[in-house]
Length: 558
Image (cartoon, rainbow, N blue to C red; front, side, top):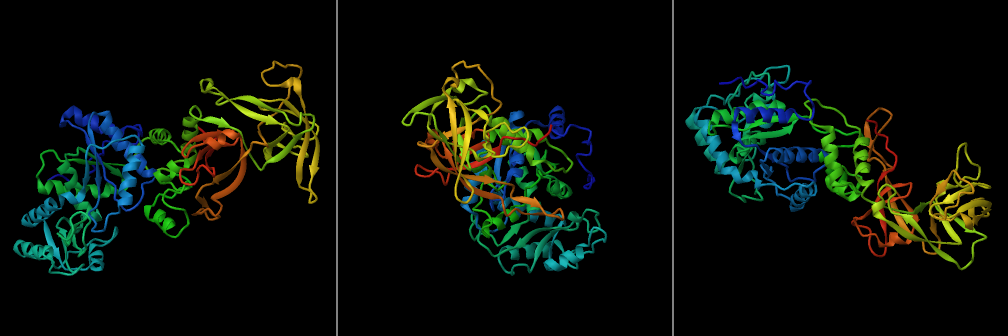
């Protein structure tokens, strides 16, 4: 028998490129014809929650690997636990996979193989490689030992094959209560790998299963079921995250002891995705959903694929991110700024710009005709002339952004302040002459004048201005709601991740008339502010709600 503690990927070193060590293994297997010309992978989610950005990395890796080699990738639900499967989770998983641009070859369930798994357990008992144990869970943990202390044999380890077969049959028939007995593999209680110290491979659970009903009251453990599922489906390369590396010897032991498959699958591990300011625990994410910390699994602050999608991230950007970070054997922490950078890179040539002002300040152009309205032509995307332009109304009363005016300007501030002249984008040169205030000292409005000869596109070159600001016509302004998101997780003074109490801020803003036509899911660049999407749940014909996808400034450095 081969050394079950040997690392089958020991030839993979840290000097290899992080992005291709799995493909290097596959290339070698194709060269030696280990599986002929076959490359079959699978994505095996557990339908107990929504998938997150870490799962996106796994989806992209498994499906794109199959695509690269002309192979197949199955979607297989891990439902070995006898719990009622939630249709909501199943639907969300399939939507996520399709949204990322992939299509599975077959949709399968681990529970489809329960009969074969039971047969495999019986086979191991007959070979003297499995036994029924009466120790409870706490006793099994105690007998198993620790990473520093060796394990000791169960007093039931040497039961006869005949007794084990009879007891296992009685377990199957429902004679015993939950936890009263388990079936354990008989491997090596002294192994330095704690996963090989006679692990439990079947347990009793008198619970109906969503797929098999009341047929079974014993259910296989994942580490036993996983290699059998892969082998039945003809998977060649079972790609999983690094925490399963210590479980691989058990994976190989099950397949080798059964000996049912001439070319059994091999498990290959890669480092899971960790991102700054992001929690990747499905259990923790579910707790935040359940206690109302967030609005649901698709809350735009959540790292779930559904949350990213509602936030406005594109599938192309997520795939680009997964490709850029590559695949490594070493755990690392990826800066979330890289993901945001990928989003900006994808959106900058795809979306149109719109004028939207936050913290609006009213501007009255005192020398502009009272009843006149002009249509100003403004480009839809400065970087993509092919997107054309749009007409935006301009009249005597306008709104400018609160950040575009300072009563006492800072050094090198070139926007609007008393006595300064700026260009109103796509319109005229405007000079601020007077600041009108309310009784409490706040700004009521700015009185300005315009130069009619300076209209954009007129060819005026009489003088230059250093600042250009955007604006919205007050008569036709559309009131909108903007949801500004910050990171859901931040570090406290001790460097621990905590929930950010200021992760969501809602503000009201004014947009140009075209904003009123935005359909749910439609993305824009709000000039000088960032990229936004009309929320798919909250935005409708009567109220426009926009999520900030990302701001314009990138903090990511190559």
